[in-house]
Image (cartoon, rainbow, N blue to C red; front, side, top):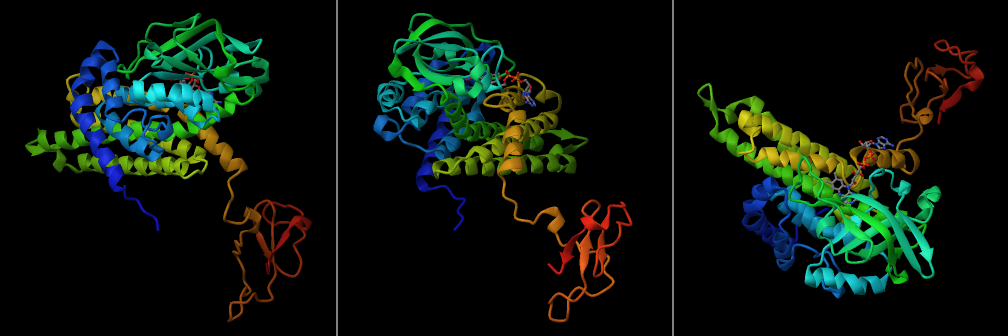
Length: 448
Ligand SMILES: Cc1cc2nc3c(=O)[nH]c(=O)nc-3n(C[C@H](O)[C@H](O)[C@H](O)COP(=O)(O)OP(=O)(O)OC[C@H]3O[C@@H](n4cnc5c(N)ncnc54)[C@H](O)[C@@H]3O)c2cc1C
């Protein structure tokens, strides 16, 4: 049976996250947005409340939640502040490579510190000269005895300014592209690690984004998370599992924008009537709800696939670009419903729109998601329907094609390989009367 309902435990978790979002996150969101600062105490409270880091497996001190639970929690936090949702969730992005790696000593060393002591960990593939093309990483990892020495700069790294640990992707040789990529866990206090000033941003100002400079950073062999040649796949597997959550950010932000727009539409009057009585406004609201609901379905499907042990890559990509682009449309329509007030900092839509704009960029842009999906469609997708030339488009027949019992009649049909013209007769024609292709290229298409 197909079941779209949440379990009682998931409903409880959603209620807990909702309360946290309304009581802790919402009241501080605009203040810290204006200050362009990440309130670390919110992250500590989130960890204490069991809605951060809870996807760490139970044996390492987490709650062992799956991605479905992650999506449920994230939607609620993002509904209050997408920036703080990024700050909270990106710890999961940071430790996900440890969780999915087979490296038990690193799991034992770092995951309990994160789960129990609220340590922060960031995830770094991007660099000043490279974001989408992960195989183009330039940060160098050189072997020195059993250790590795890292040199290079990572950029755009969420939570870099507050991270205790860093999941760093580097390369043993940029020429090797995918085959050279490796990954390490680096600690903030190690010699040669420097974090840049926070990067000033359009939105997501309650989340810290900074560069990391690595100069002759010695990483002990045991902190290698993925050896050369395995780092690229580790990054991609991580993204497949984290992209549904980016979709959940978008669902939360869009849902809030829709709710605020419904409320405002009921209260604002023009020409003597409430604007919610106008069909132009109602249609916008209906489409907002359609986008929120369809996005959530896709997001949860991707999360469910991951939790069920399937490869969620394609659904995760579809869900990411669908939900994040839909959210921008919802935000845009919501701002329109608010009229001039929507464009001000004194109403909630402006910040939501700035925050939401990021979602089509990080963890793989919309263009990259389309490339992933198109690549799958053109190589691995298994069609249900026959190839074009085998589709029985039997048009223009003068003779009956079936007898009274539905069996093929004696009529034979030949199809032009180029323009699709169907010729009826015992032999193919000399040439196609439409496109002049020689008849010997015609294929017999009836009887099949
Ligand atoms: C606020 C913020 C937080 C971030 N957090 C992190 C983080 O925690 N860790 C981390 O590693 N990174 C992080 N990033 C980086 C983010 O993942 C990259 O910005 C993103 O992957 C895009 O890379 P880029 O900015 O270098 O753009 P580019 O790769 O230079 O792309 C520029 C444009 O060209 C398009 N494009 C590129 N290649 C193609 C192609 N083949 N076909 C069609 N179009 C193409 C892109 O879609 C984009 O529109 C963050 C970024 C921001 C802004």
